[in-house]
Amino acid sequence: MRVFLGITGASGAPYAARILQGLAAADCEIGVSASEAGVQVLATELYGDARLPRDEVLARFVEPAGDAATIYDPHDYGAPHASGSARIDGYVVCPCSMATAGTIATGGEANLVHRAAGVALKEGRKLVLVPRETPLSTIHLENLLRLRQAGAVILFAAPGFYHGAGTVDDLVDFVAGRALAQLGLDTTLVKEWGE
Ligand SMILES: Cc1cc2nc3c(=O)[nH]c(=O)nc-3n(C[C@H](O)[C@H](O)[C@H](O)COP(=O)(O)O)c2cc1C
Image (cartoon, rainbow, N blue to C red; front, top):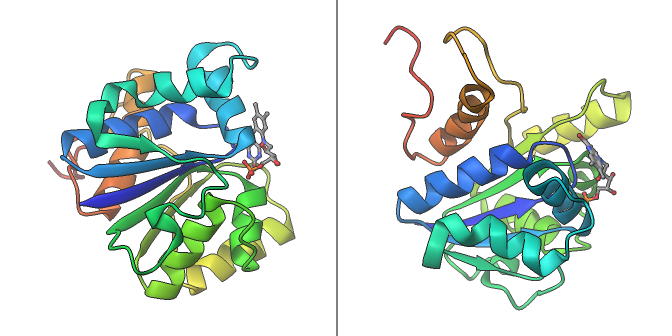
């Protein structure tokens, strides 16, 4: 399975790290592209230093995925994910900032993350957006509604506590597991209700 993982500048880097691990464990071929703010959030939330160089942040991020992941520059429109002719099975933007959600919702394609999401929508392919913002303005809500109506799955970074979560990792697994399940992949990160 070929999957695109876009990373933008909303809080939630641990979700992205877990999704990447889950995709690699499922033998997916993963294209990774991060916006400038996305790299800043990875650096801050995963490595505790917002000023780490971009290349170092991304190399550390994809390292657990080994050869399964390829990093694409956010302005590399030669990447396969920039065209509908490439057979990509699923697209995930996690975390998804409100800025990126708004840009995708209006058809703006200012970077590879926006473009890949736009390709997913125009080709009728699975697009999972994992936004995080609170509270939400009317503009945010309207953009998310528009994206849902266009076919995207809005999978809010809102972990549940009803499985008896004991650690932060449990909460991260909850969201990452739901995102992977949307792609038809391993759901063992989150127990099914009634199990
Ligand atoms: C540490 C950090 C945390 C942020 N958290 C959020 C957030 O949770 N949600 C959000 O929509 N924007 C958040 N932002 C703001 C976005 O990064 C900003 O709007 C940026 O322009 C998004 O650009 P991008 O969508 O190209 O990544 C955060 C920024 C930083 C630096």
